[in-house]
Length: 204
Image (tube, rainbow, N blue to C red):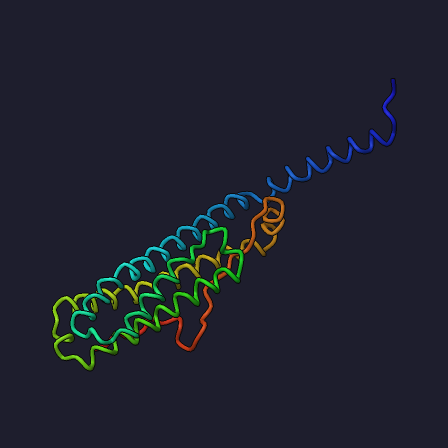
């Protein structure tokens, strides 16, 4: 039984495509490996961003309790910070979610609301000399200041990792490998307000 010409063409085409893919991977050298490495760098950088934001969230209950002890009637400010922390904690995004600008924007906005609430809470101390002199409060202030600085650093490092990765995904010849293997660009942090890329000052 002879093979039909159309069948031969399909077989030949499949072999050609397969050989082309193999040749493409070989010609691109370590293009695939470079993409994998860059993607893992983005994931690791995101993990650090999550860590520092979590560290800040962990400071909030003690800060609220300390302020409440010296300024119990500042209930509105205390409640706003507690609510903002709860909302920020509800928004969890994975490294794969970083492909979706809407999800990252929601995360940023929740963290920005917590930042604003903390700013108002810390400003309360100006009206309470005993609170400003409280050793626990001063320690929390120092930890918060250090954490805010760390957040700025880790956001910048994350953006740098995303830039390197996205450049690989969009550049030739790795763009071809990226499309075949399903690599997609990741979203960087974007300043949502003036000076959002800098750590806020924590003063008393």
